[in-house]
Length: 372
Image (cartoon, rainbow, N blue to C red):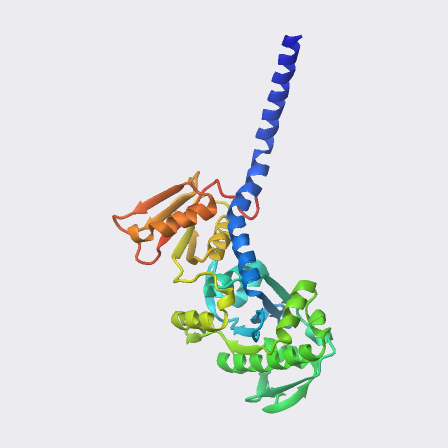
């Protein structure tokens, strides 16, 4: 009888082993994702509870389906809310792609790419992202009184048309959407100022009509967040930027990093992801998988690191992810990043440390990709 029992146990063990082998990849990928995400989620929840804050990134599409306006709306208990205008022509790192205008992010991949790019650029927590589809505002019962500092002109093939006048005027919903999302013949700076005027009017309308935020945003949580911002005396302002000339393309903006740090400390401290200067990080694809770096970027950004480069490693043969401290001074940051990612291998570069980044992360085959 004992031989029969032993045989049964052996067979069951063999079946279990075969089952584990067959399903190992399916199980380990979600587990690896959880290792990277749990510390970040815990930090987000703690910050939300401690400050009573929430944040929402809103992307408004223009008549051609491109991102025409980006704002970061934030609310915090017992303080005025903030609405920060972000130029669509702001050149920033889109993780996995390189430096492009933020307005291109949704076209590359979707609104989540814009969310992580803005969080990384400013070092702030973004709880959710919402999209206002193209032509959606035109369907709403909007008649907004908007005060503009200069007339708005649309240049046609042969003639030009005045879209809006200088001063305060009432505008129908279709014109409201165009004033917000299209540059027309205005300079990039004038366009931002016009966007601010439209947002102020739109937020006033939301404060007066509790249902309007729900008409603008389909997601109930996002609509509730925007409504909370609208009724809390919102301050509309611009993220600190400066013009930059782009070879072979339209002029755009770049961040003034020192001013951004002061801006975040003054107005968005309740969303700040770090209390000190953020360590600079490069994340390199060492396994050859598409979007291999994304989960790592999201995890370290949420933990207060600043990713300034994503690229391919020297080869795609890395079985294990490696965190490299660029000099002894950055060893603590490297070990912290390794702990966040559940990575056991930390190397120290002392012979020729980088002067551009503080640590390097080479993503190996042990880290799941977004498409695993």
